[in-house]
Length: 519
Image (cartoon, rainbow, N blue to C red; front, side, top):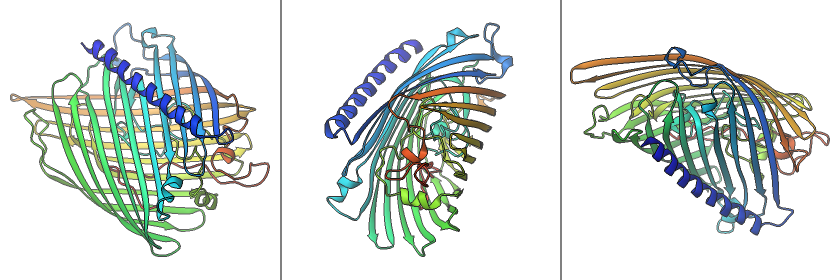
């Protein structure tokens, strides 16, 4: 039954995504002229050592399952961008074909697709007060996912730990065993100037994750999760360095057990007060704090009834950068590659910083997220991330990152907690049109779940660690500057041989249940 669901649903969704990709590509090519449309095919080949390909304690594996493996992956991808006076946008689509040496039954082909459109210029034809109008979307079919912290930005292939945007349940730090999944996301954001010092920003975000076959010697409870989040932020600039405001967020999540054993849903309403501060030309910070209410939900399924709950919520970030001036100047650019979504296994433009250019970011979030493993319903989670990148030479860039997450959830008959830590260190070196990337990842995860039914109590605990070493060669076939941030990070900025330039668009600062800080 599971295999039929996996095959039929996957085929339908892949066909829908393929059709959407073709339609968007047709729009890009038909509405732009040759000087405005860029098509860049890329190809990445990676060799990976993974000490635990199942994301499972090794004691639970069968005799024919070997935790250590060597993986060869080939990732073809096409990148399309259009820069116009009214509309600009970027689109990528590709595949991830992976072969395993010790576990050939794990061989798979995954799909990545994403894109964004900047409609601000078109919206300005109706009103010059509209400061932002953009649409973003992603699709990912991953037969080897397990949750985590999302993907880092900046040209890298594969997963990496560091500051990431929390946009769906699967990147809030909850780790499960190896499982196939389909992930969707869609978002629209708009901004409007109310007064010379006050602005209004609103966004809608949709996310959905569904699960298929599991592997690794265990069969966990997994819940497909669909989420809708609406966020509205009012921001007032008090001084040249200080901006204050408030954010209201409503989120609704629907969940269904992977085996069809139960369904549930819950709704949260959050309100935060925000403060953004430019301390120096290199140091800036954002802070948001408030409360979040989980509305009551009744359910006939044990463990899925939710009472009214109140909890604090907070988000904070601090960024130190030697090119903050360029960062602010780039905010009004119409570069089609700006804010292009990043997915594990996809290749984004950029990745090589000019020498001496660096950025260090720390972010923290405490809020309510949906639990999709071991038990459904609302989950309180702390997520802390650190990330630093810097240009060492004109062709060499280094990166280090760390994430930590702690979460807990409780229902009428079940409770679970988790802790996870991820570390990344790596370097990227540019050899002509080819970028060589060497990355080391270390992950630790511990989960505890308890249930009580019919007077019987049970508790399960799992913990594992894994390390990955990945060497990747990536080539851009029609561009000599695909991996240079000074070329694709900003429109109209000079290359490093011509002068200074700013950074590429950083990671979004969204956190909590879709709450965004004043920017």
